[in-house]
Amino acid sequence: MEVLSVTINDGVLKRSELGSDRTNKDKKSMKHVLKGDLVYNPMFMWKGASGISSYEGITSADYIVLKSKENVNSIFFSQLFQTEKSLNKFKNYSQGSLLERLRLMYPQFSDIKMYAPSYKEQEKIANFLTFVDNKIELLEKKFNAYLDFKKYLMQQIFAQKLRIVCIKI
Image 1 (tube, rainbow, N blue to C red):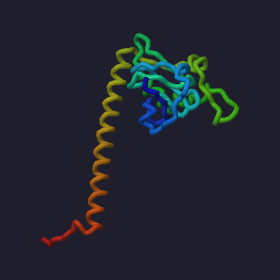
Image 2: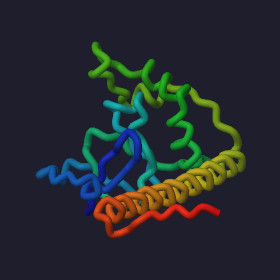
Image 3: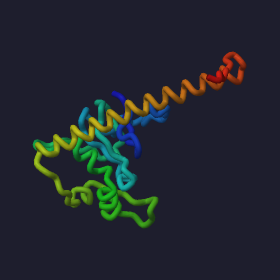
Image 4: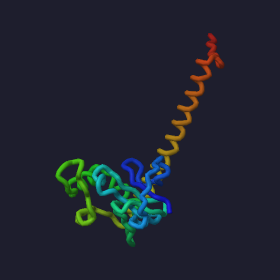
């Protein structure tokens, strides 16, 4: 099975996508993750290290894997968990003597009270935010294509393979 990791900025990714060759030799102790599960890293939950898995795979036994319940939209909660208010709650409920050692283990996580609208409203919010995320992703791809094109033009211009001519009208 694919080994998965939880990142602060990008949620759950395949470890192979991260360019990491670290593998846990004892894969028996790893947790099984299904597509759609919400996974978080207790060490960095207060920094936003959580996300919904787009893959089935296995992950570190240190991670917490949350399975969806009926009338709970995991996409809604994944987005909610990234808000500043939620991150502050996670930090307040985390335990540890130093900032670097804060951990939000499941017993403390399960004590956190969060407002959740009806399932229908959760779905609407999740669909809207997913639409916005997809739009941002498309714009980022377009932006990166323009950057690549600029680099190409610069290489051509400075190698004197392309000349810029100004014409007065």
